[in-house]
Length: 102
Image (cartoon, rainbow, N blue to C red; front, side, top):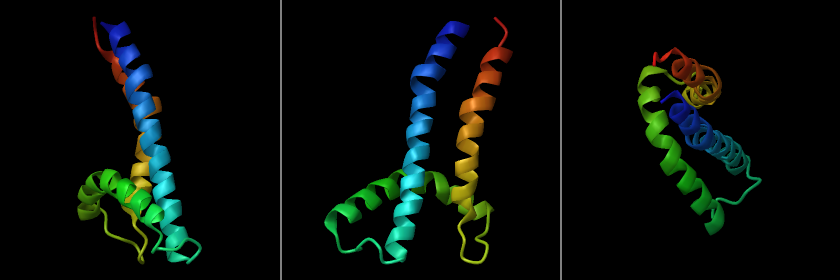
């Protein structure tokens, strides 16, 4: 059973969390580029990419925004998510798999 959990972690959960983390980074950087005027907001491709990333990240960030207030216009919920993903992927999930008695 532990081998199944390790395989699930290695081949599914870890890659999904890594892709989500990369998407989060692209979301943040694209948002900065749009606010800074480097990338045109009227570009259909940019709006499609940003809308797709928004639809994936917002359901995770919205509950955190209720708990964590913004700090001077800075959205700290995104920072919390960015710190939580590697923690879950690299520390918590492997420790839980090892701790399960079989």
